[in-house]
Length: 287
Image (cartoon, rainbow, N blue to C red):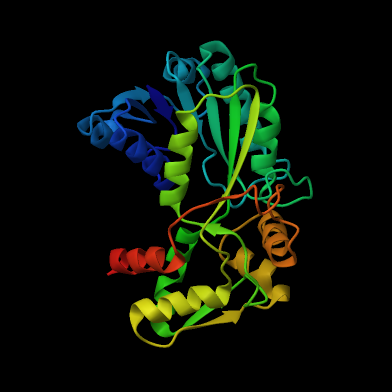
């Protein structure tokens, strides 16, 4: 059996789906019974545990071959990433007590980078998990192709504001379906100590590629347009962010290239899902 956190989200759900399709038993870790109802109907065991609840997490992680761990998204962390610090402390305590067979953590491209950015939360979790005595794997995934869901309304109007710059600069992207399949595969494998798996899609994509994909799917011209760098902070604050600098530095890192994989291109795994397939599904769901 495999215990899955974040199962109600896209990645956790994709991991669970891949495991179930392969005939494995899954324990869905959710915050309340209602959130686990759908997964119970699919044949999963359900464990109720909130983030930070060490006793509940210990029970959820116990007696399984592997645990899939992921941090909940937080695009506006307070200085020092206190939420990540608290979550790491709880997870380490629970994993140490439960002693599952192995742990797979969904990290990010650039998870090894110490330079300040929003991705420091994954870097911090990687460092915390290194203290465990059980086998641990980091799956460092590229920029989620599904982030383009935010662009669907703008694409319908023909112009997508882009923080990815220059518009023709490609970065590593990957579909959540490929992440789910990869994590499920790693969970079912055996290894010793620490393992790092870096993952992106079949090729790298730029902001212009996103616009081209939307244009193809919508059947009308769509273009990307840069959002001036000097407007980012005021824009993010106007949208309600209190601490925009980590997000700004993350975008700078992708644009400048210092957020990338640690391994050589030959070491990086490639998913099979192209960007246009993801865009097509995003547009279908938005109808």
